[in-house]
Length: 178
Image 1: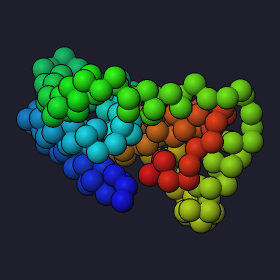
Image 2: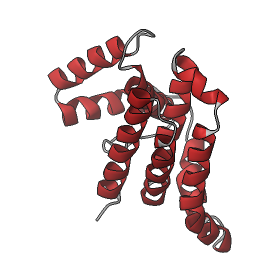
Image 3: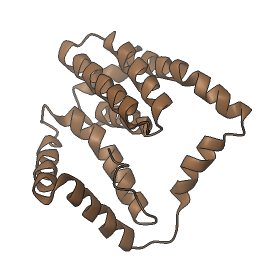
């Protein structure tokens, strides 16, 4: 059993709520973003990428920047932290063991191209080369500042940037970017 399924459900809820924020302009959706983000973090630390991606979207998208002047995204972040608090408390009582294990991978080995090639090959094999190329073309087009798909593109780029950087030093398992 892996935590991937609950993580995917929470990620879908996060993206849905963030899309509702963008489409409706109703700040109350940020609270649902926070609930989904907190539940995602309870499932898997990669939920941090969604939060960082949402922040990247807020900074990069001219229309989204207005949210930074309201309390809503900060309240959503507070809700996420509140939902994640039982886990943080448990970690604090057990020497931060899971944090030490997971975040200890960040300081991997020396610079090498070997793991980067392995990472790209694994992603191509898992998605198939054609689907991977189509995904990259779509991601590139969605990343234009005028694109209505900039928000989901920002969510994806944060994870890609991390895993590409990680792959320059250490192995990235094929399923991690999921």
